[in-house]
Image 1 (tube, helix red, strand yellow):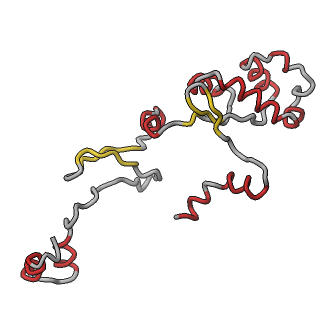
Image 2: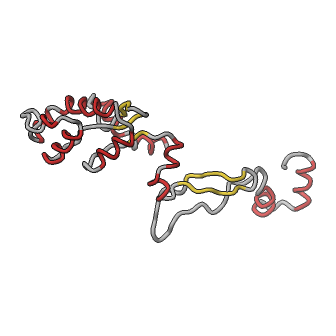
Amino acid sequence: MQEAVLGFMISSLHGYFTGNDVGNWPTEVADGHFTVRIPDMSDAVWAKLARLMDKDDLVADPRFATAAARRQQRGQLEEMLKSWARSKTRREIWDALRDLDYFGAPVLSIAEVLEDPHIKARQAFIERDHPTAGLTTLLAPWIHLSKTPASIRDDAPAIGQHTDEVLGGLLGLSAADLSDLRTQDIIK
């Protein structure tokens, strides 16, 4: 399991091993954090982004006029974008950048994740009425297969719920044996 999680950390590991950051590090904005970065972009997208940041004059600036020039100035552009974003809410940034084919997203709390419209539409969480715990929210199976859909069919068993089935059915203990073990407080 640890190795599987390490696979999700490839960008962090790359940064650690090479000293070059990869990915989106969250930036503090008006109401939380947002992962902002300057992706490679066409001249048309750059013009829209410059206008969005109230930097129309940079569209014709030779330092930023081409994709190659913008790559050379990536650090300066990222700082401009972060500076613009600091006074905006996560929603304002998301709405503004989404139409630019921007890769980034607001950093959400767990409560906000549960209320996210996309997460709800994907039915990423389900509710189960557990016999002893009551109504519980669970992460639904996240692998979606069309021919063999995954599902949660049973609740977590209560302590001792399957004792008779395992000891009697699988291991062959008699009803008298089980009763004796209960009398001795060995099983519940």
